[in-house]
Image (tube, rainbow, N blue to C red; front, side, top):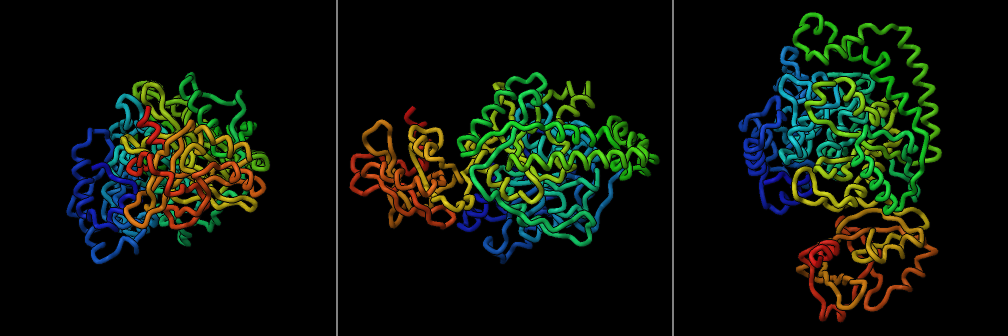
Length: 594
């Protein structure tokens, strides 16, 4: 079986449809049958994995937030008793204890299945710089997977595990997410402990989360986060959602967008802008020059010296053990002077001040995660320049103390994925997850390489003061014929979710436009896709007065148990209608008719 999302797994455990042992057996069978993509450096034996499964005996899925959820770990993050190689065999060591973030996940019920491939010493955005083989893209073997967290991303995208850990210093948790049609969460710096992680640039490193959905990424983040007094770079970070609506989404000025000749990626970024408008956001073109200048500092400035500091002695004693392009990049850090270091720090402070002013005009910055994607052969022929191109939209984020989430946003005509990254100041992780979930679902894509659609998010954003939340299930949904009745009243979408499984759903006779009827039942109901919109209080009356019989506004129970105003249908009106409860979605019904 394809590994389900975390939400689907936990639901299955609660309903006793499978056990952690049966899930692990299915996971291992799928890994054995998967095409060779150079995903793994070390796979745990079944016996070793079952030791983790045994620890779940007698425990409840309701007591452990990641009960029985299989995950993978980038091989620069420690798992007790398993070699950590950082993709360099001669560097390998066996840690006596797991990294703090890994142990938190295990304590929450998650089950590790292996250590994944990476660009050696986490130096690269391509996924090709490894003696364990170039990790292959989940959609096309001839193209790069992205890096450095290559194996972790491909393992999630191809359904081998439900989530994975990577690291992100310059984009390593975002670029491979975009190239494999999954979500990559780069948390605020210091939110997750990096104790037990082989450093790249220790002052900038973050542990990243790869998941099929933003909802799953949130589940992992909630467990993994936490202050670690023994990690000098750990800090207390207050997490917030975006407090006002509509959101102002910044995008680069047209002359600052660079797609390296990739017209398909350029069009997909335009489509992503159109999509955020349907979510109620406004688009603001901004000057991104301070961001791009900061990005250049990461590899053109003295921060490479941090990478050199990590492996200086190893590089001197094992010069032939390091991948040639990796050695050339890191060795340059040994030539940096203290004077250059201070000058770069001064310049960075100036750029940080300039960048901070952007947040007076925007709430979130949306960028292409990468400007294009390359065939592996092109990267191997020109490894440094093409890698640098991939970092244009990612390298500055940690230098400027920002949080980011990469979400899928479409496909090129040749079937290769495209993604966008949502960026905001440190502490905005929850807000980015909310927006990322809505944007991902609105794109109408499948998860990873599977044929399963992105589930509707189940964590609605809070309703701002002065607005009323209204759940819509038919022609008022985004992009459908009556959606303008919401847009014209300055309403905006809070979330896409589902009802509680307590409703029958009908296609009513009449039209155009065709209209559905949602009817609450005492038993035997289903869960139905809805969008929750925030309608200004002063416009709510006029909106309701325009609703024709037999529809009306009542209280609808959502998947999380909350009640929300929404469209319901009088029971007499479903006579002569077509019951479509099994489809679970008005969009699915429309698709079936076409």
